[in-house]
Every structure is written in structure tokens, then in C-alpha cells.
Length: 429
Image (cartoon, rainbow, N blue to C red; front, side):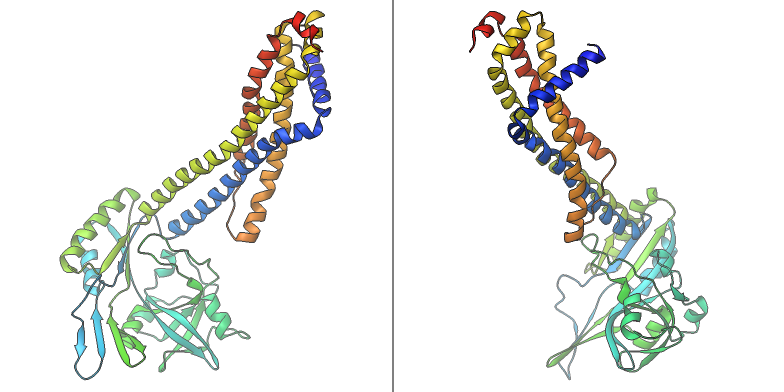
């Protein structure tokens, strides 16, 4: 078919469709919903997946994290005979840290960490913060920097200096009107620390994996690990009404770094084997960010398939609507088809005419669906806080699927129109 004939057929198709505007609009409504839902669902799924992967990747794809975990049941805590107080010892230890470095050859670096919650005060301002005892290489490990001042050094670690680096929210709450660097804060009731740095705002994590809880790094107070051990000891106290309980935890976490991702799972298995010998109570948990990343990607694929299937049903319904309305159109225009055949139109011309009409109809529905689909994700993201990422290919794919469905469901009505007997068609009133 030449370009002029195609152009004439398109103009004729538009003219025929505009004769029944409401009917055409209601017909393509299914395609509009289908296309827009495909784009919106893919955008929301992609955004949520990227956010989860970002949080997991921040833990490091070449890291293995060993965390202290309260044993499932411990009926024999150390009990002080003079008071209702209990000291429950559990978790990974400094001895474990030394063994990991000495016995597992794939380990490039191991970073210990100890955390607990204490009230932090400056003059009349007070906040409950997470006190984190770490080594100087910790910030690099979590991909964090210092916005003001500095992080502590090996010299601070060796001399067990009372210096600290505070998170952005801790700085805002304790020092709303002044610069925190160089000022003094009080941790607990008797320990005073000089603020030497402030970390920038970091988006709180939603928790990744069964053994990693959500964390808000902005409320942290970082102190040298040696200072933590010297000033606060190994017993974390929990005061309750009428009683006092405590937990003995040497280290809250050991982050082990290997040279390549290929060695991660092997190292995790070696850690599990080693720790099992010294921790029969199972008071530890091993988390492999690489495995979490792989699971997140697999979940994303399943999520996309499910959402795509739901949106595909809308497109299918739209296609059925197009077939239904085109069959009705064939019945209405039977006499017109007979006249066209009588003056020389071939069956192929009739098929082309009806297919062009369905293509124009589905293309119009697809375009409107793309516009709606591009507009919905930012609105959903604004009101729900769920991130949405529109990939460049998703509107194109959704539009092509809509056009394809229109053509596929338009073939049967077009062939039915073409197969009408011209003489019988002319007799139709």
C-alpha cells in the first residue's frame, strides 16, 4: 500500500472513530488503565528495589557481618545473691576477633564494633543516643564521611582519649545554636567527651535481612573502641522498676572484609564453622550482604512479573473491548462494506481499513496511558514516600504492547468484515 493510500486510510479511520467519540473513549479506557498501570507499577517496583539494594550495598558486597545475638533461651544467667540482678553473658568476643584475623586466610580486614544506648547531655539539652565504640577505619567501611572537624585517629585509640564524633541529628538536638566541634558532652552521668567531628545526614536504613535491624546513623555518637572498653566496661546495665538487669557483651559486631565477591560465601562458611566451636548457645548471627543483594534482585524479578501480570490483565480487557466494539462496527457498516466491494475494493483493502482503525484507536489509548502512567509515580512518591524510578524503556514497551493488543484483537473483526458477501451486504438495510 502506497503512502498516499495509507494516509487516506488513516484520515478515514479518524473520521469514522470521531462519529462515536464516547463509545471509542469507553473502548480505549481499558488500554489507558492498562498502559498507565504497567508504567506506574514498574516505576514503584523499581524504586523500592533500588532503595533496598542501596541499603544492602551500603553494607558492602565483599563484607560478612557477624553480630552478637541474645541466645534463644538462657536459663542460667549469673545471679547476684544480694539483689534481684542478672548478668547475661553472650555474643562475639575480642578472642573471636583475634581468631578470625589469625585463622581465616581470605580475611583482608576485620573491624570490631560495640554499641549500646545512653543518655547524652550538653548543658540543658539531652538526647538518648546510640553509643558506638569503633576503630578509626569504621567510617570508610560504612561509606560515611565527616561534615565538620575530624574522625578520631590511631593515636586517640592508643591513648584511650575521651573524644567523640556525633551524628547530624545529635548535633542539632544538643547544639541548636552553636558549633559542636570543640565542645564537651556528657555520656551517662560521669563521662565527659570532647566533640571532634560531626557526620553528615545519612538516610536511615529500613533494616536488611533477618539479623540486621533498622538503624538511624544520625543519632550515633562514635567513640574509640579502647575508650569504650576502658570507661564503660563490658557490662551493659538495664534498670527496671524494682529490679536491675545487665548484659555482658564484649563486641556487638565484627565486620569482616574479603578481597573479592567470589570469596564471600566461602568466608562466611568458615566463620560459621569456627564460631560454632566456641559459641554452642548460638549467640551470634552471620549476615552476608551479597546474599541479601541476590535475594533482593530475585524478589524484584518476581515482583515485576506479578505486577506485570496484573497490568497485563487490564490490557487484555482493553483488547477484548476493542474486539467487541469493532464487531459491532462491522455489523453497523455492513452496507458500506458491500458498496466498497461493489466498486472494486478487495478483501485485503477491507482488512487494512479495519486494522488501521483499531491501530489508531489502540495508539490513542496507548498515548493517553503513557501520559497518565508518567504522571502517577511522582504523585504516589510524594504522598506515600515510596520511591519511584521510571525506566526509559517502560513507557515505550507499554505503548507497543497496547498497539500490539489492538492489532491482534482487531484481526478477527477485520477478517469477518472482509469475508462478507458483497451482494448480501448490499441488501442489508
